[in-house]
Image (cartoon, one colour):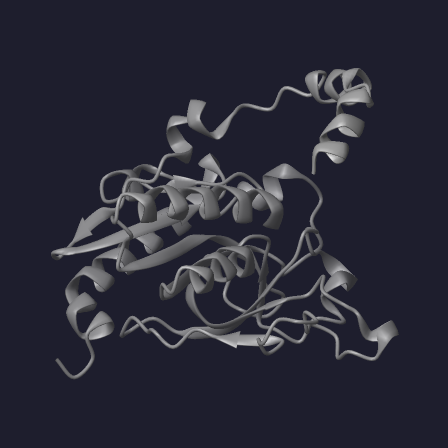
Length: 246
């Protein structure tokens, strides 16, 4: 051990430190929106998770205070895992997580809200080594992870997550009903902490190929209202959802 410490002391740290020092992302502890604040929904502590402020409209602002992850699966995994670790350290884990926001779909109703019956990770592909696409080697999970908790009265759809925006012909190889960027990462963090997850997605685009930012934001105001209604439905049935048979 002492020899290793001696050798490590001789390795100059300046190049690495200089390289990292040039990168200055905002630390999570300096971001108020990245601090977990579970909401009390009909007496149950629920942590809501969203990706982008554009999706967090006035109707939702009247009901919830979500953890904001940023865009994509990496940011979602980092922020949610850090938040849950912080809550676990204080013995304050929520009873469940609700991951909500927008999604794309080529055939579902535009601006409609759906709950995810399952979620998959379309970027995971180790098929060149003989593993089925979607399977993470060494992880005992199916390619399509079921989400068994359901809010009554909200239609269900299968969800696929990945790091790329899907548009036009990009839907061709995807057999799920809708696509997003964060839900699988959030689900994976939930599984690591033994927490159930509910996925709610409003369909913002997909009927036609995307032509720019406005094609994503066009329906977000309407989706905000419909997601707020979904939160109200959750509040009305949360006892039965989280404590079936109680």
